[in-house]
Length: 100
Image (cartoon, rainbow, N blue to C red; front, side, top):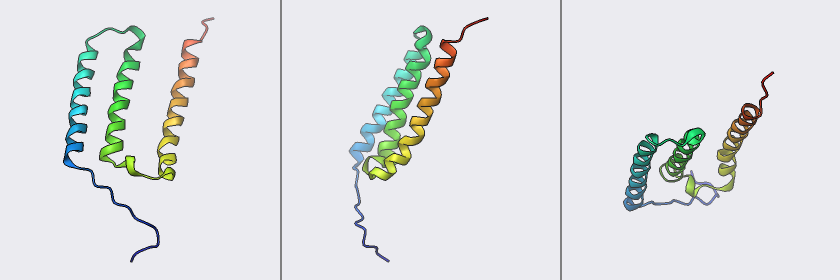
């Protein structure tokens, strides 16, 4: 049964998938390499930044979020904003805590 809504199919070629896979492999190598470096308090920040890039690639290409409408993007970005708010407020509490 067809609906009146326009259904648009997006075909992503094998080349795109291979390039994304190669990018994920390179980022995994960078993650391992960076784990041996000492960034002080920024170790977690660097690790989370690389992991966020990898997760974005997976979500955009393998989960096909790149081709979704604005409503879906709202449902995708809302929890990410809440997570960033939670991490940010926790960091503010930890870094500006005073010892009695």
